[in-house]
Image 1 (cartoon, rainbow, N blue to C red):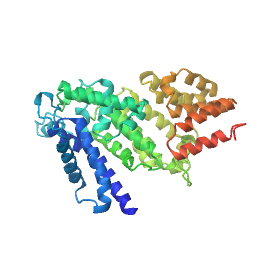
Image 2 (image 1 turned 180 degrees about the vertical axis):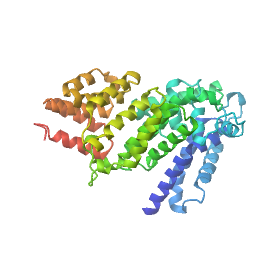
Image 3 (image 1 turned 135 degrees about the horizontal axis):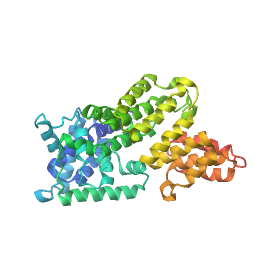
Image 4 (image 1 turned 90 degrees about the vertical axis):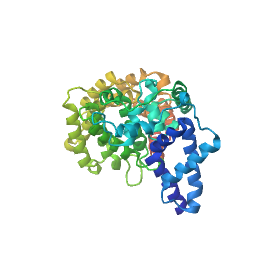
Length: 415
């Protein structure tokens, strides 16, 4: 069992560390991203079957590359027609590193690939999902969860965008330094979505997501080095640092879920919070507020409880109101309603939730958890029980599921 676990862990770590690099390297020769991803998937499966028996190879990445290459050759999917070739992502990154000093110098190959995937010819709504799968290695189900769409829908969209890239011969090039700000938005969204995937797995139940939050923070730091004058890059870094600082307080000694307003502030990582505050100050100097700066400011307001002993819900509700104006995501709208509940009462919050389209919130667990909480506060126990059941059905984390089941059990008539 121990050897199998270590082999599984080694394969997962190799996948996370080198997925984008292997995709790029193989795409340079086979020029078909979908075929390359299939081959790498087979290679990872082979690793899990072989490494426990034969031991983890000295160079796991080289082993995976060799197996994936054989899979591609065996499948006969080597496309040699230049007119239908997907441009070589790895090759253009190599070229960027060898260009004149006037070009952008990327501190990490994966960061360069993220900007390459933000090509303007790719559908705007699919640039971030493409980055998440091709460069950062998230599967379609996780990407779908981040965008609150069915997994099958996201999978179909990813297939279509890769087919378009191949068939239209979209030529990927490392962008000029002047183009980077225009491509920054989807890159930041991809990094944040990757962080969110790692943040949600607080119990470490999935090895593939283990360390993903740290990797996202690292990429966020690299973006601020590459584009130090972009306030949203600093805002995203501040946001991730604030959230990460509370990771250790999200579970009690028995592994139970602890919501933010009940967390022990002594268990927060205060040096990281202080860094987040300094980072947010840098972002604010430009005087150009944006989504990530506002989200970081909301987390900063929560952190003040550690100094004052209370949460300023009026300030948080006001910040959420500004966030919803410029970035009305489902998460922002639910967060605003949660803040309204504390600042103005459960009735106002429930009214805000009622304005959200049913298609948007049908599978969004935080919506149903908050709705259940508000209905319970308003004494509408039967409706609250139904909402709790919806939230429980949408929960993957066992600790969160147990927390919600406990709340449902306290409702009158619903033991």
